[in-house]
Image (cartoon, rainbow, N blue to C red; front, side, top):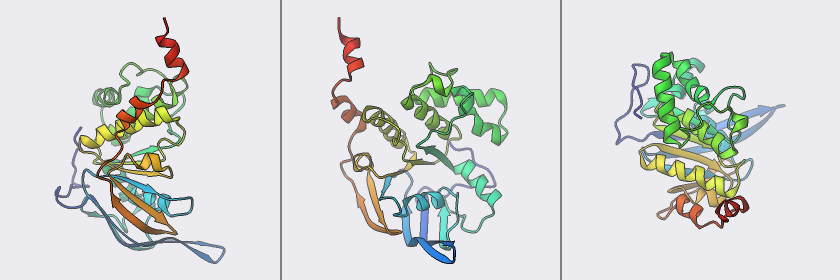
Length: 266
């Protein structure tokens, strides 16, 4: 899938960073108390990176994700996404940037409960004004890419947690964004299903999609090729992981579940 370009959002050359934060600070004022959620964060992420942002609750990782996702603005500093300065853009302008450049995957899936997998995946294209036939084609392609071609007409309550997260990933991919933001995408999943989802994210990353994943679990972060650790609103470490865990291999190494053993029994 290739990102459709427009005059509103033009892609930067591939040798420029996809994400560039400079001296970013985020303050919240509550009852006359200023809370510094981020403190002068400098961060550069290149096209094709797979980055895990880790930290305990209150470390600032969710605030950083919201700024990267154009869901919030920094109090101070600048943020450039794919060569575009989005720091002071209006809410409507940032919504256009989100729709064109970013796919979101959340812990809670955020699927419409009475809507089929196919219709859920089509939804971002409805907001773009894409015609029905083209919407369906792109949604079918996206669901096929995540291995759910046989579950098109199932509603979320007819799908497992892992299948629901795959639908959510397909929905994030259907607009062909260069950036996928995943906020605790395995938080509601068991170990086996978590590795299934991580294996899918790794395949997408190998296909050229930049992935930024927020997690508090070290074993999930170990599947990324770069791990950023946050504490007290600051980046405390930023390390390359030259040997990320292969999620597909980790999945294959897990012992069979009771249900799988039953299926193999004569």
